[in-house]
Length: 369
Image (cartoon, rainbow, N blue to C red; front, side):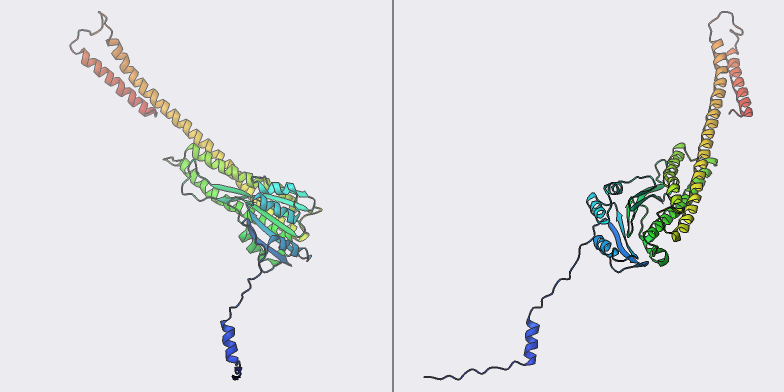
C-alpha cells in the first residue's frame, strides 16, 4: 500500500484570528424604541420636586411614572388634537366623556368647573395682528382658547387657534423651581399670568390704533370713515369677550376654596387677578372712547350734510331769481313794461346778472357758500 504522509495541522496564530474576526459581518441590534407621541402633542414632561426629568416620554409612560412619586406630576401639552388622540389621552388620565367633548371644540367662554377629581379651567387667548393701516376689513385682534385639565398628578393643556403658544410659558416656569414644585396648579398659575400679560400687550397696541384713529377723525382732511370705526369696535368687542369673562374664574382661584390651588399659590393668583382688573379697565375705557369717536364722526357727517344742504339752497335761490325774470319776460302778453324797448333784452340780462351776484355775495358773507 502506498502510504501518504498525514497532512500537518497548521497552527492558528493570533493575527489570523484577528483577520478572521474582521472579515466576519458584525450584527447590530437596533435600539429599543418606545411608542412615540402623536403630532398633536407639543410637549410632554415629568416634573419631580420642580425639576424636569430628562427626555420626552410618551404620555402613557409619563403618567405611569408620575404615579410612583408623590412629589411628581406630568404636564402634557396638546394643540388642536383629533378625536382619536383626545379620546386616548382622556382614557389615560381619567377624563370623562364631558371633558373629552369640551376639549375637541373651541370658542368656549372662560370658566372654572370642577368634576370629581379634575378641575377644568378655560381661558381665551389673544394676540395683536400687525397692520400698516386700519381699514374696514383689518384684523386687529386674533383670539383662541386654552383648556387646562388639572388633576392630582397631572395637568393637560389643550390649545385651539394660533395665538397663545405655551412653549415660552413652560420654559419660563422651569426656571422657577420653587413655584413649579407646588404641583399642577403652578402650571395653571403660569398660564393665567401669561394670558393676562397678553391682554395688556394687546390693549397697549389697540390704544395706539385708537390714538391714530382719533387724530384722523379730528384732522382737517379726514380719512377715517364709519366702516373703519365699526371694524375697530368689532375687534374691541372680541377682546372684551376674552378679558371680561375671565374675572370670575381668576377671582375664584384667588380666594381660599375648599379645593384648588395650594395656599402658597393663592397670593400669586391674587396678583394675576389684579393685573386682569387693569386690563378690564383699559378695555372698557377703549370701548367708551371708541363710542365717543363714533358719535363725533356722526356729528361731523351731520354738519357736513347741513353745509351741503345750505349750499344747495343758496344756489337754488340764485337760480330762482333768473328763472323768475326769464319767466315773466317770457310771457306773451300784449301790454308789458318795456316790451318794445330797444334795450329791453340787455336790461333783462343785466338785471338777472345783478341779482345773481348780489345773492352770491350775501350767501358768501353769511357762510352758506
